[in-house]
Image (cartoon, rainbow, N blue to C red; front, side, top):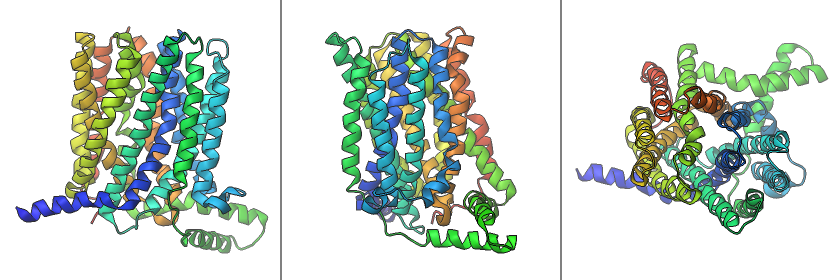
Length: 457
């Protein structure tokens, strides 16, 4: 008994590593842009009188996250003039993307949604592209903080990354909602536009914090990539501009894919990809329409901020850290089975809320249950794909797996608003269907559970 207690204590002590604090900040930097293009944009459009379908289809801008692996190799190799030399390769890219997001917020502050919807969505797309590009570097920098043989540290790092992401998303959401409500109560006509300028200050503060994140000394990643290029050139039998381009494209995009299938085998690799694609579709359908649902059943922006953002953040932080310990102790696969089952059940609580109507108690229960489930699921998922990557292709291979996971959540979930409209606003039925959506991913996970190689020990 004492040995087991000591083991749990040792698992918790992993969080004291200074690298976990750096990973926490990186997660916050990654999560904050979702405040802008998810909850804030959705509520902004809702309050401007736009339809649920329009709000849902506007979410197609999230689709860029599903394809950021395509330019991940470029980010791995290209140095940003001035920034890379002064800040480091990874941090230079992050600062550049943060600057793009900041400029986009300034542009948003001058836009009227009903008169310039296309321009508003276009700027939102720019934010999404910058955020998706930033995520490539953030994830690579996060993984490279930890050695490849530190399985427990990787699980703890995954937990801290998730806590950081939700901190950036939820606390950023609290600031956004309360600021918007404050300006609205003051009688400011374009209160959302003014809010985005305030959010720009948070972007600046995050860049200052980034300067305290250590960037590891350059390893032999680029040397190995050039060696792969040379092997391809040798096979092509010549050395000129065309063969150099072919070698670059094949080595940087084809290499990570070939490495992944070679390591796992075709059947297991396809099972992994199926699971990654399907795992969070039900959660995404619920999440995309949740803030619209809260508004329709009568909750104010302040109540949404307290229950969905503030209370949800506290719950997420606590259970994400516990989820990291569970992943260390039971393994990521068992943790994902556990979280997947809970994910399905908690969606039913939202169905109950839809049938009962406005109830602050039930709202709080639903938010807490959903955040507990999401915390366990996300920690296990992030640790799972972090352990799968080949360190020669850290950014590219992680981005590929994360993008496949995002593809299911973004492209399919973009129809969520139209789906609710098709159901004639029957939110209860909508949430029951999101429950059923979890099952296919668990079937894929069951088929590969004993064969996937993730090196957790």
